Length: 289
Figure 1 (cartoon, rainbow, N blue to C red):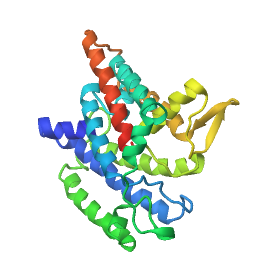
Figure 2 (figure 1 turned 120 degrees about the horizontal axis):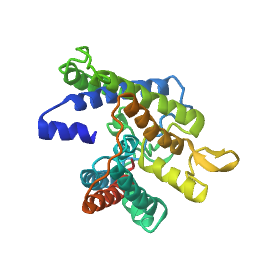
Figure 3 (figure 1 turned 120 degrees about the vertical axis):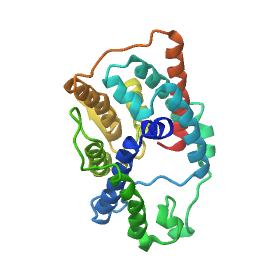
């Protein structure tokens, strides 16, 4: 998403934005369909609480960190798979403040800011984690809201010619967006089947869970089903999929002959991406993603 908005602002190129919107539309439709079909259990999609202050402030801080680190949480992970050492340093900074925010001295501050939540209703009928349609007190109009969102997305995507000529190398933006959307849907289901709840894809929490598993033998994911590896420790499903991101990026880069080990020549650039990762970790933990 970082690259998508950057390209729109600086080079007036909407290709990646269209791919992102296509993935978003496919994911919204598919995830809500499998929820309605009962494939995600009684609780359905594990929606986050609507905490506007932490979302806005955390998103702003996260954005600042992205610029300095040279990529978002998923970005620095896949860039490692391409051989970029700077991305590894950014990830170290990212993890450092993530763990501080979830389990360390910043945890009380995070908890206090996140305590300002918006819920719908009261008593037994209260909706603690409302969806968009719940905010308008219209749960029966769920698919009307989804239809409106998709109707906005379709003309933007279609204007980019999703069925046009395929590139000589790699996938087209439309195929990439479609596949990402499908992966998101599958992740909602697999996280329910093997993770204990339909958590879906995110990177801040799961990356923290992976590192705490390596350090302490426990992902410390209190709401998730945990697994042991060869009888050792307790790791979450979400932590396991984090491992696959740089591996998949490596295989893709090798297949396209784009893998190359690179490192910044200047120490100050390594410091910049490290501190960018640290800023990103605080923002990611605060915003909830």
